[in-house]
Image (tube, rainbow, N blue to C red; front, side, top):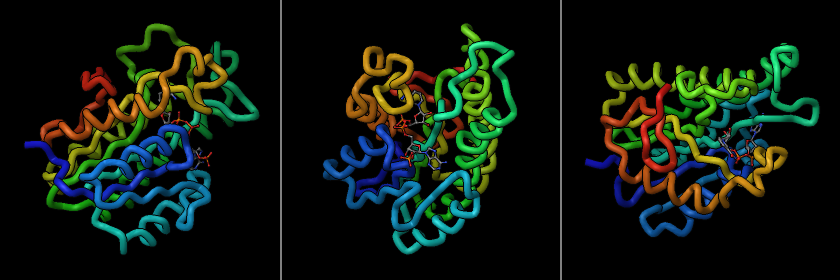
Length: 231
Ligand SMILES: NC(=O)c1ccc[n+]([C@@H]2O[C@H](COP(=O)([O-])OP(=O)(O)OC[C@H]3O[C@@H](n4cnc5c(N)ncnc54)[C@H](OP(=O)(O)O)[C@@H]3O)[C@@H](O)[C@H]2O)c1
């Protein structure tokens, strides 16, 4: 049996982003979605991964709007005004590695911890957007050290939490999802406009996968196409 009930209430974390914003639009237009809340660094209840305390505070502030049957976390970074993904080992530096770990792995893991209290224990799904380049098995090209390592760390944190939730939250699926290459702020410097898909196509595909999730899928790394990816 699929997990997402009808109707369902949704929370999108990182709704100021390209993929997050497209999820908000899709959910607002989905008749089965009774309400959708979006949060980001500048929303009324803000969440900022450079300020870890904001994660717990934001979850506490939103508890009145819970339970949510669907939480989707889209926060992530690949580059900044100070650096681009590393092409070679000589580009590796502690600041970049630390910042990507903070935003792509530690923040999302603490989000799983604190926002888990807002999930409906009867039936719910929590999806965190990861990236296929975080797959250790699939790494054929190398490069992008910090981004790859931070998404691999994120994947491990999700897998580990899903095992605990198998005991403590048996009716919740915890998922790492790859969106495919999407035309966004994040992909722009890497020919995202040419090789990336429009975000609304990517989220439509991801939502089809989300709708079909069963509790047995918890602890999976799944592509927008529904394919199970190797860790
Ligand atoms: N686009 C792709 O081709 C692609 C491929 C694979 C995986 N992904 C993953 O998909 C997710 C969404 O990416 P996107 O393409 O939609 O990128 P995006 O448009 O750049 O959106 C990134 C989101 O992350 C937020 N964010 C960045 N740093 C933050 C921080 N310190 N604290 C809180 N929020 C922060 C941004 O908030 P602000 O608006 O405040 O900056 C924004 O909401 C990411 O996890 C990314 O790794 C994307």
